[in-house]
Length: 277
Image (cartoon, rainbow, N blue to C red; front, top):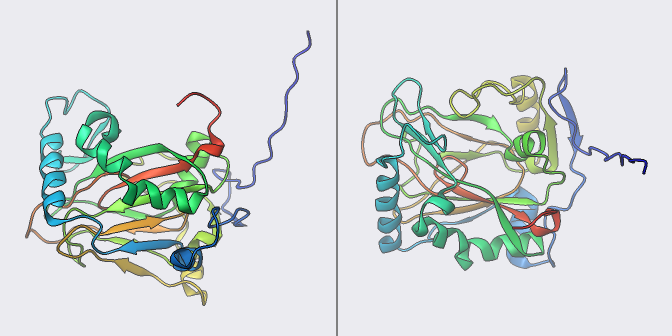
């Protein structure tokens, strides 16, 4: 028998010798049109300032605190440590480690919106909590999660949505999530490779000149997503986002469930699943 190889076209080239810019080649909203998703189609993100109740938020904060003091700390690679402070920065696969966060990931307020955006059932591609203690917690530079998943995990198309849930109030000094509206319509293929990305994010990120050009376009503009006293939820697509460095010492350590600045779960459409769940 002769083996055959089928070539797969890469619609979003990245990690080559030079930066490559590609216009989005996939829908933003894959499901039926909905008035509630118009801003997501336009801006690339959708916010809910009161996704969780105060009691729910307290429950998830307590679970976050338990996880960052877990006995597995230092021995399990899912716990990521800040190089300078030696404090927990992120914990991955929280939906597998914690029943509490597993329930949140599957909550209809979280997963239901992902299904409406993606037009299908969904699975978790990645989940994590991010923690930002006062004075010294580093940030995340402007980047696209899809670029990382595409280059490193082989995710082929932009049929993904992330859900970031802030478990503390977001403001200018405590490491809030920032999103560049409209940037989900442009894919920036980064030059080079990623080295220690989760600790020091200087590789596989867009060049500064490119970021300036993207931000200066009429449909774009830097924006900061801020929460309220209760947890705010942000459903976002493949756009550029960043997490500010925390410069204050007041209040509890910022944290959450998932992917970005204050927590998230990354959802992908099951249409891209080729193996068992």
